[in-house]
Image (cartoon, rainbow, N blue to C red; front, top):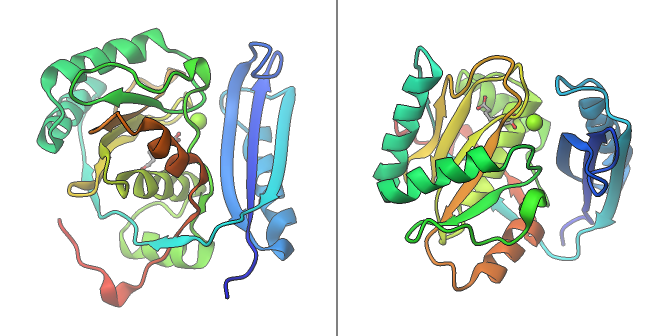
Length: 260
Ligand code: PML
Ligand code: MG
């Protein structure tokens, strides 16, 4: 029997709530046992109150019991691509997306969608074959939820992988692992909307979490999160997995095999 788990979520905005057109500042997801709900809420509150995108004047933190058993997933393998500027970073990203099977035409269409959708708070879903956006969620996008990686194993893993032992990395690898483990995901492309963070990634089940050291200029508040979907006829089931299926990451050194 698993313990009861609670999904704890936060979103924060500035100059009004998201619904009233405010600027998105921060969002966050955690899973917690009943005893850890307060700690999770504090972690998420701190994340939003000291944010490089600005001081929020709207924040919502909520928790709810997760009514399904969670699945355990091993984190994606990590590979770091060091580049000297954002243009080089995008070249690497485009090549990786092509390797995953995303046609060049779709990649071009995705970059157009990114430039037209500044200030998104969730992910955009794009049909890998047609290049069309398929999520119908406007500025809100799709928020991947109900996932976490408990600190103890994350910290061991990060130290072993020479990755920063940082909440940001934990969140990004957790999300990328959940997304990549759905068979309809062809690839993900992401970089942060935080002005002080320029590292991003392309991820897929086969290529792993391919960090790219620079995908934008410092000071730029435009971020990106796109999931390239292989089959969009089951898009509602796919969205349901992203939003509802509880996932916990686990990692054991002995079972780890590296690809790089
Ligand atoms: C984000 O901050 O919104 C995404 C960060 C992606 C890259 C994290 C990393 O691997 O350093
Ligand atoms: Mg951000």
